[in-house]
Length: 395
Image (cartoon, rainbow, N blue to C red; front, side, top):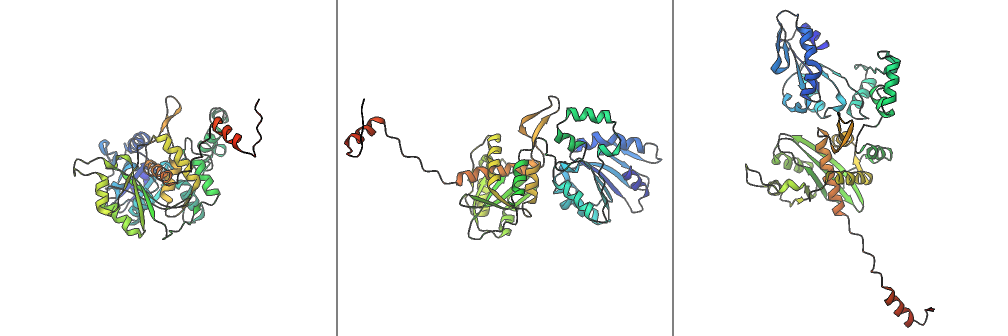
C-alpha cells in the first residue's frame, strides 16, 4: 500500500517503485494478487500481468522483482523500494546495485523479514536502531496481540524453541534452521578468529574457486602457516569471463601460490574448445590445481573442521562469511524433513568454493609419519633370548 500511495503521489517523471523478495516466483505468489486488487478501481490504471507491473495515469509504476536476478537492475533508478524476507536475500544486492539505484532520485527503502541469525538483515536492523534518520520496528507475537494465545500455545507445542523464537519472537540469536556452519562460525566469532587478518608477504596466497558459467564465480584467498590457515580475502561476481577474475587477482597485489579449481575445471567448453584450466593458466601464467571430485557431504564435514582451524578477515571476507552463515540444508515441505543436500541459492557459490578450500588445505597438510612396523612375537622372542639383559620364563 505504501508503494501504491507513493506512486500516486509521485511528482517526478516516470516514477519507479519496486517490491522485491528472494525469488521472482515468491514475489508473484506473495503480492501480485494484492497489487491487482488494490489498484483495480483506480481510473486509468494499466495492469500488465506478463511484467507483474502496474502503470498509473501519472506515468509512475509499481513492479515486482526477484532478487536472484538483481544484476539486471544495474544502471536503473528506483524511487521507492520494499525488500521482503531480506534475511534470505543476497547481501551483495543492496550495497552494489539497489542502494546506488536509489541515489539518483533520493529514493527510500523498507526492509521486512524474519530473522535468520545475525546476518545482513541483523546489521541493517542494528544500523536502523543506531541511526536517527532510520526507523526500526520489531513486531513480536507476544506483544502485538495479532494472534490468539491459543494459537501461540499450539505453535509453541509444535515448533522447536529455536523455530518459535525466530518465527514468532523475531529472535536474531536463534540458530538458522538447517544451517551447516552456524555453530562453527559462532565459535570462530566467540574465540576472536574473525577480525583483522593482514596479508603476510612472506607466505604465498592460494585461491579456491567455484566456477560459475552463466552464474556467480566465487574465490577465497588464503595463506597457510604450518597448521594454521588464514583466510584473508574473498571475491564474488556474476556475468564475467575468466579475464575479469584474472584481472581481479592481479589488482590485489598478492604473491600467489596455487589456484585450486573444482573437478569440472578441466572440462572443455564448446565455444572455445579450451578448458577453464587452460584459460586460467594462459591468463595468470600459473599452473592451477584440479581437485578430485568430492562427495558434497564429505566436503561439508571437511569445511566444518577447516572453519574450526581458520582465521578470517572480517572485512574483506564479509560476503563470504555471510554465505557460510546462510548455507543450509534443503527442506522438503511435504515430508517436513531436511534433504541430505544443500539448498541452492545465493549462498551456494561462496560455500562451494570454501569446500574446495577445505579440500585444498587438507592436501597441503604434511603426512603424519607412519608408525614403525610391529615385530611378530617370534622375532621379539628370538631377540629376547639372545639378550643377556632379558629374563624370559617360558612355560
